[in-house]
Image (cartoon, rainbow, N blue to C red; front, side, top):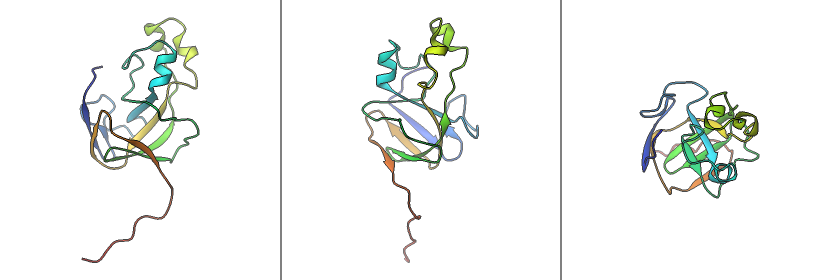
Amino acid sequence: MSSLSSVVAIAGRGLQGDASLGRKRRQILLIEAETLDGFGLKPGDVRENIVLRDFSLDGLTPGAILRAGEVLLEITGDCTPCDRMDSVRPGLQAELRGRRGLLAKAVTGGTIHVGDIVESVPPGPPAAAHPS
């Protein structure tokens, strides 16, 4: 795991260069910086892809859409901590239950930069096409 200043999302596939590229459900793992801080962890310790600061993942359910910079992400569900977490710190797998973050897939492609605004996209009908 390494920290990057930007990452390229590929629609329907995930993040360029990531081990989870091409998976259907587990393409991208989002976690709150405050969660990492609360457990005394550094970015990358729980193998997350994107760390969000001052943005709560609470209440987001599968199907929710987020905009991260120019990329749309669809939440696919909670991330269940695996036994690899106990290699970071004994007992961490149990401590992180329900707190490891949310999984998402890339709906659109584009670049996400450190510091980009992340926001929920309200549900609604798709934008109408405009005649040229």
